[in-house]
Image (cartoon, rainbow, N blue to C red; front, side):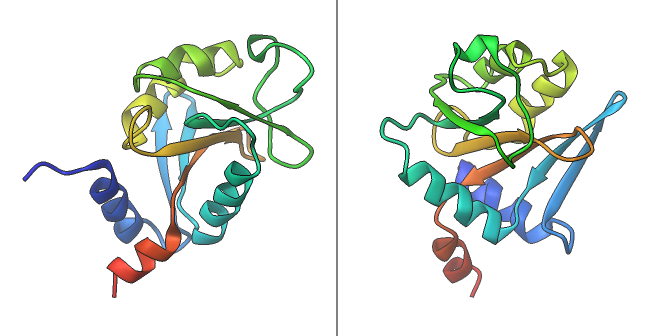
Length: 147
């Protein structure tokens, strides 16, 4: 049986550190998966409040300009933007347009199961400047499936 994105994500959640994070060292940078249930839930609530949600949420400096004219930033004070990508690889061009280095953007395309298809992902910068991704899903399902 082939792993679905949800199964892959469940494995990541189960195998992640005590802090519910997975870090990937990419060149001189770090790509971080934030798998904390409270953060996943918060992103889910954010997604519900977006009138025309896509399958990617982005914490940007501005919502007053075209997406390609802003930059990714940390969550606090950010303009949360939503967009849609059709394929996993599309995230590379999108993140590069938001000032993320190519090798870090490529890591996002490789390490976010279901991106562009089954699972909505949120992207933002963490306080150290690391690109961080968090899946948006029903954490109650996750908790119930682990019992």
